[in-house]
Each structure stands twice: as C-alpha cells, then as structure tokens.
Image 1 (tube, one colour):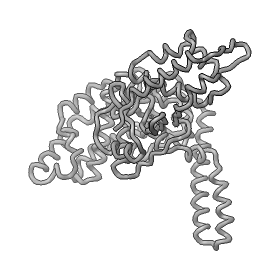
Image 2 (cartoon, one colour):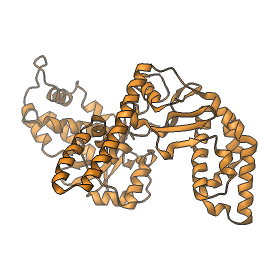
Image 3 (cartoon, rainbow, N blue to C red):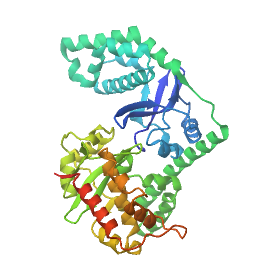
Image 4 (tube, rainbow, N blue to C red):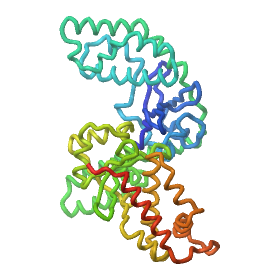
Amino acid sequence: MAGDIIPIELGLTAGDFSTLWAPEWREGDDEWEAFLGHEEDLYGFSSVAELAAFVRSDDDNDLVDHPSWKVVSALAAHELEPDDLHRFDLVAVPELVASDPEADVLAELQATFDIVSSIGDVCELRPVTSFFGSNPFVGAVGGGVENFLGREGGELWDRIGAAVAKHWDDVLDAVDSIVTSPAVDSAAVAVAEAEITAAAENAVDADDVTDDIDSDSDDDEDEDEDDSAEVDRDPIAAAAAEETFWTTVGIDPIRIITSDDTLYTLRCYLGDKPVFLGRGGAISVFGSERSLARYLADDHDHDLAQVSTYSDVQTAAIDGSLDITVTDDNVYVLPGLADDLAEGPTAVDVDQLDLAVELFTDAADFAGDDSVDEALATSTPLGWYVSYTLEPSPDRLAPSAPFDVEAEAWRALEREFESRLRKK
C-alpha cells in the first residue's frame, strides 16, 4: 500500500464501510492525523468500488494535502481493499468483552480501541474521548493475556466489560453520527467494479497456472510458464510488482559519492519538505549499506524517527530482512562537476548536475538554510549558468567564458554541503 494512507473497514450499526485513514505524519513542525472526510463528516462507502471511484474524482477532502494522496488516488481499485488487520468491527466489541480474554480477542479489541480513539481525537467526538479518558484501564488489552491472569486479572477484565456495557453504545452512536456516504458517479463505480473482478480472475488464473506447472512434465512447464507470463503482463499486476519496500514506506536510501568517500543515508519528503536521517540540519552518513542497516536497528534520536513509517524500516533492520537498495535516481556523484563547469556547459553531465542541485537544495532545506537557493538564483552568475545548462534554449543568452567564478561558487556549495555530513 502506498505511503501512509491506509484503507480500512469500519463495522458500524448500518453495516460495513470502507474508508481511508492517514496515521500521524509531519508537515514541518506540525503533526497531523486524518481520515477521508470533510469538516464534520467521515466518509464511508458500502463497497471498495465506490471508495475507489470517489478518491479518483474528489479533490475536496481532508486527505488531499497528504504527501501520498496523488499516489493513492491513482491506485487500482483492488489495491484499496482493506487487509484483515485493518478491518474493525465496532459492533462486535460487547461480544468480545463478554468472551474470555484470549490472545486473539485482546488483539482485536486493542486494534478496535486504537482506531476508535483516533476517530474520536480527529473528529472531536466527546463520547469517544470521554470513554477512553474516563476508563484508561481499557488500554490493558494491549498488554496481552498476562494482564488478565489470576484474581486481579479477572477483576480487571470485568471492569473493562462493565465500562463497555455502560458506555459503548454512546461511542458507537457518536461514530455512526458522523459517517456519511457521498454520491459517486455510477459509471466510475462500474469501472472500479470491473477492475476488482479482473484482478480476482487474474489471481485465480495465476493459481491455475501454478497448479498446471506442478503437475506437468518439464516440457509442459515451459508452456505453462509462458501462460503465466501472460498473466503477469496484466497492467494492474505489473504496477503492483513495481512497488518495493522502500516505495511502500516512502523513504529512500541514497548514495553520495564525494571526492573522498562513498556514503549512504536515508531521505524522505513530507509534503515538499525533505527529511534526512539526521538531526538539527546535520545528516548522518555511513560508509556502507551494512553499517547503515546496523545503525537503523538501534534506537537513535533523529528527525526521520518521527516519520510514521520509519518503525517499519527499523523492524526490518532488526529482523535482518532490510535490503538497502539505491535506485539510479538516488545516486549523487559530486567529483568532477566543478571542473566540468569550469570548462563550459557542453562539458557538463546534465543529469548529475540536476541531481547535485537537488541534493544541495534538499540538505539546505533540511537545515532551514536559504544559502543554496540564494547561490542558485538566476540573478547570480552561478545560478544563471546552472539554469541555462539544465534548460538550454536558443532564445536564452548563453553564459560566456571564462567560467572560473561559477566553478568556484559551485565548489563553495560542495564544501557547504559536505560540512553538513556526519559520518557514523
């Protein structure tokens, strides 16, 4: 699933409703959490197809400013199907607390309490916030079955049951009252339904192909694999296959090649704001992917830890599954650029210059420093030179040699950037 917007299903009095939830994310110094909705309303849809049709057409809701909104609104309809971990049955809570406090019961209760608490906070529902504020002991369900062993544990379980029996109807009524289902174009819903049906059929076909491969001879396997390849060329499946762990968490490993070293770090964007692995404008860098992974497995105080999906990165680093793979558009090669700039625009590797400008600008933005923007303003010799090199045009006046001043100004930007790096 893309970024930090998660499809969820809410089991309410009127039925099951699909919607979207954005756990906490940061914009500058502010933290936000939101659900798909607008003003006082939380939008819920009776089918995933209706949800897909809505997010593809609506640009006036509380999630449109989220960094991942454009990605989510472009997803295939079946990718908006909530997984089992994100289906919350609010109606079933009284039944759960009436049963024994077994592990699966407690896990379901904890998940439901957490999402309802978030809805209460985001939507300012007094009955919800009052329930959790007045009954903090319900949080004990997150501690596992050990909290409910023995006499005291049994009494605690009874207290939770009593609180639910007394107040949960008010909680449910409050959530019911804000869920609305906006009208959605029927043709758009039909398109989404067709996508979901096609995806389900493709999954069945893929299973059939696998069964044939297992039962046939080696020669038949080759033919079946050709059939399977046809299935894999489905555009929805192909798009899903392009998603990696890093695109899912919305954080990128980057490689920086300086004149002295090859360094690795992480970066993401919250809105338009770059956030690096680091703190206070200083960027933590490592001499190898392995040393970076070791660092990520431990707890450290840095700005990236505030990103909601960073915990997924740390978990993967701890269990050893983290694969730090740097894509070509996240490799920054600095050596030689200043010399090429001194020689003239035709000598410059435009792609590497563009990437270096991106890196220097992001690092300065991370530090809250305008010096790079000022140095690259088109009113300066270097800014004009870089702008022309990246976007040449016969209608623009070409910079004229010599380019010593521009090259030296670029070297100053390199030194300034490297001064922000802290090798661990």
